[in-house]
Every structure is written in structure tokens, then in C-alpha cells.
Image: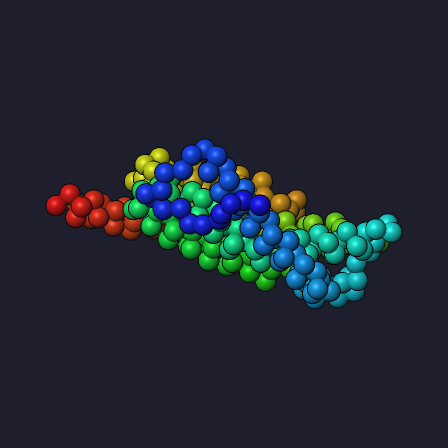
Length: 253
């Protein structure tokens, strides 16, 4: 076990061994949080699986398994995914605690605010995926050419698809954070974003196609919020650029 896992201040002078010791301790804490979250999630895995299958059309909610181990491994997969989601605040806190001393205080405050904003966007994105994205994709996919195929849904494949769609929607909603981060370090500016809107929307479309979901419905549903978030990112960049410029002027005065 590590000698300590504590918050390191900007004034602390640590050797390489101390940094590695701290990193090991934080990894143990993060891993323990994921394990604990997965254990709690496993206790409720029946409810979690019912939640994931509820967007399926009636008559397709009892999933098919083809191997002896598939019911068990599918339940474990759901439990680990839910456990990671439960432990994510602790994992991010441990990551933040390790990286924060390397940043100056103003940057630390800015990143802390962006982290909170990113967590909120992730939650909204996953809720969007569960309420809108996944049901719409399933309505299209499950009924596609249903007169030709005997459509049966395999448990492991469906659970993987559902988790990927939810994760993709959550990640897609992080677009404003990426844009603001690039603006903050000077790689982008609101002027460049406005001048190159068409290129930006083309990149958004490419990202939408690259996200999980082979059907046009899933791709469209994932791309539309990306386009809206990209436009919102432009105006957020305008707002924060003015705010950061005012802060620099006040600091120089």
C-alpha cells in the first residue's frame, strides 16, 4: 500500500518516487471505487438490464442468449459499466488531485469549472441518448425488413450496442468543452470559428458518422445535437474570450 494519498499543494516539493507513490495510491483508490460501484450495481443488475431493454419495442425485451456463460458475462458487463459510471466522480477527483499541483492557480480554477460543466454535459448527453437516441434507433433497426427476417436480439450484442450509444451521446455532448479548451490555449478563436462555420459543420457531420450506430437514424440523432452544440460553442467562445480579456486587463492594472 502507498505511504499516503493526500492532496498535494503547490508548495510541496516531491521526488519522482513520491510522485509515483502518490499515483499508485490514487490508482488504488480509483480502482477500489470502480470495484465497489460494480459490486453495488451487480446487486441491482436485474433492474439495470430492464432499464436498458425498456427502449426495445414490445415483444423484443426478452433477450436471446446462445452460450452457457452469456447470461453471467452480460450481467457482469452491465454491472462494470454502471459501476464505472457510479465511480466516475471519484476517478475524476483522483485524476484532478494528481494533476492540479502542476497547474498555476488561475488555470486550476478554470479547469475545475470546465470539469463541472463537462460532468453536467455528460449527464445530459447520456439522458438524451436513453430517452431519444436509443429508442429511435431501435424502432428503425428492429423493424427494418421485419417481413424477411426472424428478428431475435442477442443479449451480449444488444447490451454492447446500448452502452456504446449512451456513451457516444455523452461524449458528443462534450463538444463545447473541447472547443472552449482549444480557445483557451489559443489554438482557436471565436473569429476563426465564425469564419469557418461550414468547415466546422462538415467536421461535425464526419464525427456523427464515426460515432457508434451504422443506421441513418442513429447517425442523424447523434449529429443534430452535435451541430447545435457546435453553434452554442461559438457563442460560448465569444462570451469567455471577452471575460478572459477583461480578467487580463484587470490583472495588468
